[in-house]
Amino acid sequence: MEFNTFDLHSQVAAGVTAARYITPTPIQAQAIPLVMQGHDIVGLAHTGTGKTAAFVLPILHRLMQGGRRHVRVLVLAPTRELAEQTHEAIGTLGIRTGLKSVTVYGGVGFNPQVDKLRRAEIVVACPGRLLDHLNQGTVDLSHLEVLVLDEADRMFDMGFLPDIRKIIKHVPAKRQTLLFSATMPDDILHLAHEVLKAPLTVRVNTTGPVSSVSHLLYPVGQHLKTPLLLELLRHTDTESVLIFTRTKHRAKRLGEQLAKAGYQAASLQGNLSQARRQAVMNGFRNGTFQILVATDVAARGIDVTQISHVINYDMPDTADAYTHRIGRTGRNAKTGDAFTFITSEDEDMVRSIERVLRAKVKRCTLNGFDYKKAAPSRDTEFARPPRTPQRRSEKKKTEPFKAHCEGPQFYGHR
Image (tube, rainbow, N blue to C red):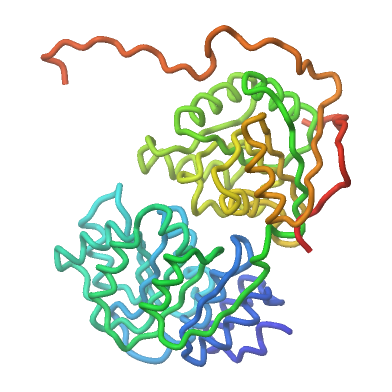
């Protein structure tokens, strides 16, 4: 099957050709015809399966018929990064259409968005800032034809469901609604019943992480995680590496330690300004930064195709979070590696992850690494510096590493 079998509008098809898209992914092959027929859709697919083009292409096809210069499509996204990536995909695939897309999110100027909203047919927005525009009367959704809820489970995790319900009150009842999610917790299922009409479900590989990812566990004491990480990086051939930590403070400190050790590393966490966040993301995409350290919340929306390794410096809180994390590698017909550092406190979560994977994950030790080094009497690595009192008036090409691993090599759920 090829994209020309969808019979897309000629100017949309020209964008597909220019982007060198030839063979659709499974989610695209299943969803595009149904969306073109006007059905409401629930799309269940992990990050990296091509779901953005699965809704962008039929939407562009639809918009080539009908009026211009008013908002006809709204895409709601959980993060600024995902909003920008969707906006870029619309620009790439719709390059020959003349259709205009605008991103709407906080942390940047309000008035420039107002000017662009007056001329756009497609709005890609984060819920909070869009509500600001609705309350100010600076966006009109009365002509809306298509509503897309992208990464709905992530929006739920970030507490956006009340905002989404408020936004839906501003859109016409007669519309097409598309909901995409990697998982379907009860709250998202209830939302789907509320906002979709007779939806069809498109499901692609949602029973476990992608099969192109190799999973390895590294048991290690908490105080030895950073030394082990440095040894693994020194002996591992990597492209881009995404490292997850539990807290913003740990992400920042670990990023600083990696940079001090000579790596092109940066951290992505909630305390960054929007300009700095964008600079970090751009640097990670273009290779300026080889390593990105992030929390789960800060990493939502990251879509970098060449990530070779995901390293869980800290164990995630849920098996679903593990799935989301490691879904950022092993994409676009490439293989990837997921390394997870585990302590004795993580055994219950390991069992939960193995249930999702439907297989035991092998445990590895790095030959030559000193696992018996005693822990320091106090935490000098991640301890927060004491607050300064304020006065009231002041406002390489590497050799392969050798590791001993217990259990068979495991590559995802097949």
